[in-house]
Amino acid sequence: MIHPAPARTASRTSSPSPGSTGVHYEIFVRAFCDSNGDGIGDLNGVTSRLDYLQDLGVSALWLMPVNPSPSYHKYDVTDYYGIDPEYGTLDDFKRLVDEAHRRGIRVIMDFVINHTSSRHPWFQEACKSRENPYHDWYVWMTRQQIDSLNIATREITADSQERSPWHAVPGAPFPERYYALFWSGMPDLNYDHPAVRKEIYKAGAYWLKEIGVDGFRLDAARHIYPDWEEPKNHQFWEEFGREMEAVKPGAYTVGEVWTSAERIAPYFRGLKANFNFDLSLALQELIPKERDSVEIVRMLLHNRSVFEQVNPNFLDAIMLTNHDQNRIGSVLKGNADHLKVAANLLLTLPGNPYLYYGEEIGMLGMKPDENIREPFLWDEKGRDTGRSRWRRPKFSTDSTVVPLARQQADPHSLFHHYRRLIHFRNGHPVLNDNRSRLEGSEIRQKGVIAFHRRSGDRSVLVLHNLTKRGMDVLLYPAAEAEGKKIVLDTQGKARLIKGGKLRLPAYGCVVLEDK
Image (cartoon, rainbow, N blue to C red; front, top):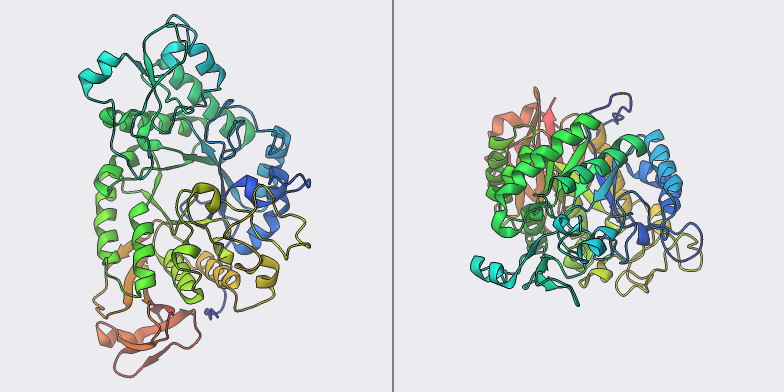
C-alpha cells in the first residue's frame, strides 16, 4: 500500500497549460463503456464514467478517433466535421466536452490528417480524372516516376507494415498510382497542395473553437510527407502549430513520431509533445528482468538533452504501452508486483504520463490489434451493464482480469495502487511538473533505479527497487541522508537507517526530499 506524507490536494483553481501537469488517459471509445445496450461503446458511455476518471485523478482524456469511418478503429476518416453514428451525435460529443471541463478534465481528440479513407468524398472525386479539382489533394505518380526515384517499395517500420505503398485505382482513366503508406484504404493527403492545408486547418479550428476540445493527438505525424521528403514534415508542423495557437492559445498537440531521439527532435519545433517510444520499450525490457540493463536514466538524459536543444519547453509524452502495442499486462505476464513497479516508474519519471484504458486494472492483450483493444471490465459479467460487447475478449476476461468493481473493494489492488500514486503525484509540486528537470544520481546499485527531479528551487530523490529482495541503499553523499525525509513509500516498509542508508523494500518506490 502507498504511504504518502500528509496529503496536499491538487488545486483546480489554477489553469496550467495543457500537458504541463497531470496524467492523461487514452480511451478507445468502442471498448470503453456502452450507454445504450447496443454492445458498442459510445460517447455517452464515456460521459457516464467521468466521475470514475476524476476519482482516478486523470487531468485529460485522449479519445481515439470519433469521426465517421468505415473501420472499427476509425483511423480512416470520411468526414472531418462529423461524429461516427456508432458513437453518438455531435451534441453527445459537446456534452462530453462540457461535462469533462466541469470536472477539470481536458479533452484531446485524435486528429487523423496524414490520410483519409478511400471512401472519403475527396478521394472518390480524385479518382474520377486527372482534371478533377480533388485529384491533386492526394499523392499520385506514374510507374516511371516511382521507378526513377527508386521508391516502389519501402522498409517495414514500427508504425507501418506496408512494403508496397503505391496502389492503382481499378478502371481509372489515368495511369497514375496513389500513395498510401498504411494500406490501400488509407490514401495519403498531398500537403504540397495549398487547398489541403487550408481545409485541414479549418477543420482543426472547428474542433478547437466551435466544439471546445483542448488539443489534438496527431496520428502518423512523421508521415505527413512521404519517407523521402521527411524534412518537409518539420515545416508543416511548425505552420500547423502556429495556426492552432492562433485559434486557441495554449492548444495542446502531441505527435506520434516513432523513431530515434535525434529524428524526433525537429518535430518539437511545431508540436508541444511527442510520445517517447524508446522509454516504453525500455520499461518493457527491464521490469521483467528486474534489472536496469538499458541504463534508462542515462538514455533519458541523452534524449532529453537532444529535445531541449530544439525546444527548451518540450513535453515528453511517456507511456507503458498504447493501442498499437501489446498491453503491459501481457508483457509482464500479469505479475502483480511487476505491474506495480511499472506504475511506479511511469508516474514518477519526468514527462506527461499516459495511461491506456484498463492499464490501471491490469488488462491483458497481445497482437493483432483487436486483441489489445478489448472491452473494459467494469463489473462481474452479468452485473456489468456498461460493458462493451464489440468483440468477445480473448485475453481480458473475468477469469484473467479482476473487474474494476472488485478492485475498488480491495485496498491492495492494482487499481488502488494507481489511484494513490496519481493522487500523490497530483499533489506534489515537483512530481506534478511534467516539465521538471531530470538529474542523474550517484547511486549505483544493482536492481535499483535512482534519479533526481527538480522544479524551481525544489527537488526530490526517487528510488525504485526492481527486485524481489529488500535492500539497503547507500545514499550519496551519505551525509545528505540526515537532512532527508520520506514523502512517498509504496510498500509502507521503507526507512532511513544509520550510515546514510535507505532500507528499500522489494518492488518498492520511495521519494525523498529535504526536511
